[in-house]
Amino acid sequence: MANQILVIGSSNTDMVVKADKLPAPGETVLGGTFLMNPGGKGANQAVAAARLGGDVTFVAKVGNDMFGQQAVNGFRQEGIRIDYVLTDTENPSGVALINVDAAGENSITVAPGSNANLQPAETDAALEQTESNAIVLIQLETPLPTVGYVVRKATERGLRVILNPAPAQTLPPDLLAHLFLITPNETEAELLTGIHVNDVATAEQAAQKLRELGISNVVITLGAKGAYISTDDVKQLVTGPRVTAVDSTAAGDCFNGALAVSLAEGQSWTEAVTFACKAASLSVTRMGAQASMPTRDEVI
Image (cartoon, rainbow, N blue to C red):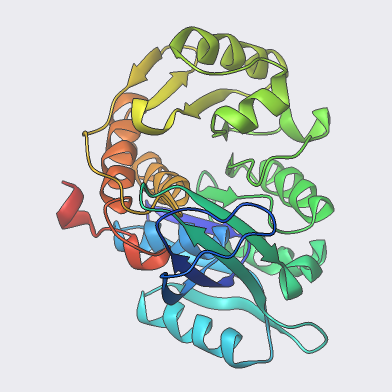
């Protein structure tokens, strides 16, 4: 299919407490509500892409436990190909503990479990079965050697690699040079470039620096301000609809899944980022990670 997307990444179970404020160190905040949701950046992006019309295959590793079984059942229900979702007999499934305040801001602690055991060679079969020019979407909740391996192998096969460099960490230059697209937020862009990103001008500077490192295309997400595109032909800010956020968890994942779908379908950069901003703005009006991902009918 023309919109084939291979997502390689993490699967977690999110345990979410929503309260009036985030606790300070040593503080207990009472009065919260508890939700348990499927999450993990890779899984979130796979679900987002599938709901928005993408032909999605997912590569991940889950534990041989209740959380892993629930995750796989969820992927199946979303219409995601799960042939390459592996079961780890030595490590538990990944878990994320998430606090969300009244304004929708969050703080997250992740125990990666089986995600940290996804080996480079375990991605080979999926990469070999993916048609050339398809999109490969990857993040940084699996081991960096595996990420680097995927980027190199996918590029060799003529696949277009989108790296969402989250959670933020420094990356080797040889990895960056192989990317079709990188999609950092302000924090991640600053870590990668040393430029403090807080407006369009600084986003433009950071994007230019990333392109000088050999990355073909850059999209820097700026939260409620939208996203800044930098390619050979396009340099512009795309704004999204104004909404009242209740939970920003996985907004970036929604953006990346939507962007992958639109680019896989051959949309222009401006069209693709506009679509992604719309999808992400819808996701923050709902609680949860995968639960907040909109369908294509809701976005169009």
